[in-house]
Length: 103
Image 1 (tube, rainbow, N blue to C red):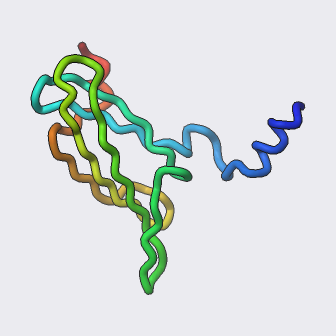
Image 2 (cartoon, one colour):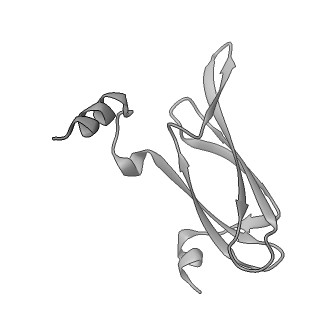
C-alpha cells in the first residue's frame, strides 16, 4: 500500500463511501433541467451547537449545465447522527432518483 493511501486512511472518517454521501435530486423551476448533487456528510455539514447536543446544517447552490443557469438553493438540517431532518428549496423542486433517471 502506498504512503499516501496510508495517510488518507488515518485522516478519513469512519464508514463506507455510500454512508458518507447524501444525494440531492432537483429540477430547475425555470428550464426544467434535472440536477444531481452530492452532500458529503463529513465535510459539507456545519455543526450547530445547542445545550442538548449538536445538529448539522448545509446549504448548496446548484446551477445546471444547460441554458438558463438559474440558481437552485437547497438548505438542509441533519440530526446528531447526520440523518436528514428537514430540507428547503428555492428556484426548483425536489425530485426522486427515479425521476432524475427519466429523460
